[in-house]
Amino acid sequence: MELLIDRLTKHYGTKIAVDCVSANLSPGVYGLLGENGAGKTTLMRMICSVLEATSGEVFFDGHNVIDMGADYRNILGYLPQEFGYYPDYTAMEFLRYMSVLKGIPRKKAVNRSEELLEVTGLKHVASKKIKTFSGGMKQRLGIAQALLNHPKILILDEPTAGLDPKERVRFRNLLADYAGDKIVLLSTHIVSDIEAIADHVFVMKKGGFVTQGTVSELVEQAEGKVWELEIAPKEVHKWEKKATISNLRHEGERVVLRIVADEKPSPQAVSCRAALEDLYLYHFPMKEENLEGRFLR
Ligand SMILES: Nc1ncnc2c1ncn2[C@@H]1O[C@H](COP(=O)(O)OP(=O)(O)O)[C@@H](O)[C@H]1O
Ligand SMILES: [Mg+2]
Image (tube, rainbow, N blue to C red):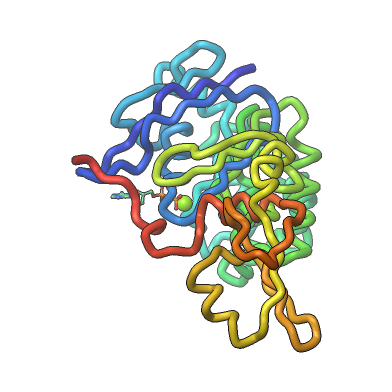
């Protein structure tokens, strides 16, 4: 099974939201990591053929997914970032309704809905109206609806948004259980969410992939760029202005900064082991300019 993304591009007027992105996905869990505005949602919507690409194509096992039509939708599960819930539906009614839209036969739909309410921890609120749900509960219901048709391709746009730490762990386990021989793509701007579950991570910035690889390959890329520096508390502000700080901790009267930089930031700095968060900060230093995208000339 293979999902081929071939030079997908999306322009909004002169704005380039996704810029000639290609990837070849075989079964596994893929993380799409990037800050707001990087193009994650636009890319995912094109992969799901919910949004028409300006150019480029998506192929499932050699077939253009647009030509596949319903055959593609039948093997696809999608959690959009902005998901429309029906506040007056109960959780069970909502899943039944989504099953109808997905063309799942009634009996199957009931069984599958019950199963998914169970695995997402919503069984006890199955007959409660969605308007009474917390953000995390709604999100879990959104994940459940994406799984209704046992999709071979599962695309989740910021699935952990609104989940508390316990729900995150549950989600991670659910996904690990489900993934198996499926293609799973999830987006997030939270590094720790994909560190534990993604086999392969695409780091997306300004509409394109700036780097990609396994978590350990990406961590490897940050090795030699992470430093610790002990300073006096009054120097913190100065360092915050001139360096990318990935962590700050107090040690007695002193402050220890963790700095991400190509070069040793100060003669007193000592090199230390990298983590995925450091690579992310390396590509996304906290500067205003990174919030802006790319434009056509
Ligand atoms: N419908 C739209 N019209 C114009 N610009 C858009 C539209 N949707 C997204 N964009 C722009 O495209 C870029 C990528 O957005 P998006 O795909 O939502 O990124 P992400 O999901 O990574 O936050 C952003 O700069 C955003 O403002
Ligand atoms: Mg988004």
